[in-house]
Amino acid sequence: MENKNTSRNPFPWIGKVCKYELKHSSRILVPIYIAIIALALMTGLFIPVSSDGGFNFSFTFNINGNENWTDGLAGFFFMIYWIIIIVAGVVTISVISKRFKHGLLGDEAYLNLSLPVTMGEHLWGRILTMFIWAVTSLVVMMISFIALCIKNLSVIHFEEGWLVTMFGVILFSLSWSVCIHLFTYLINAIGHLSKKHRTMAKLIAIIAITSVTSRITGSIMANWLPHDAIMLYWLAFIGLIFSVIYGFVTYFIMELRLNLE
Image (cartoon, rainbow, N blue to C red; front, side):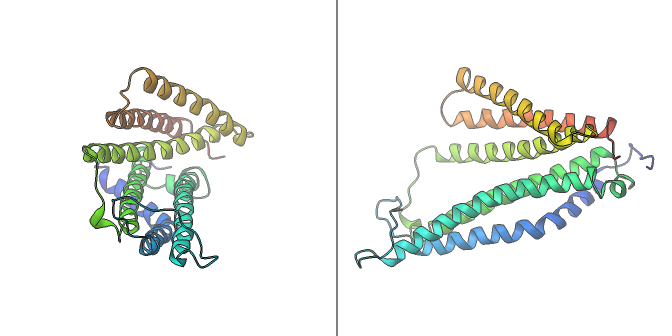
């Protein structure tokens, strides 16, 4: 492994790592996100126009000739739309986690770690990649929501203070999306510390870390946080703190305890 110069500008190398990771992950994720928008548009074209700014999701197929067949199609597309959203979330986490595992702990590790790139640059490049995908996911969700409402845009109304809530949701989503991805990094790094029982080590780490995280977050929410839109901002901050902890511990393990045998 080459001796890497720590005094150089790290950003070009972080950018190269990010570009490489985006190239591989986009092959799977981009088609899924396109499918979400397409299904949202198809669903929106069949959703009945509402006169009060709400949505009528009582979709039924035309069985006895009493219901409009478009309601049934809207219901079908809406169901598929949410299924793909769930699949997209799972696949995104899985793809990014596997890229980390293969790139730094698996088949590509020897090649990647022989490059003149520090462990910190490897991790920051992947963190930047996951942040880009988190932002992309939010943009896709917003576009798909507009597509769902395409026939009802003129009658939609928002409650007072909706901007504060929406911005809180965005920060919360970005923070915890990065947190979840860094959690998978940490679990993979911990599992790699064990030479023989890596699956068991990962399982124990998942149970222990999620138990501590949920207890801390639940206690803070119950005793300290206001139950309004401001809570989203505090939860985003908590997610950021956990992200920093997960990232630091992952870096420590990868830098000082990495074992590729």
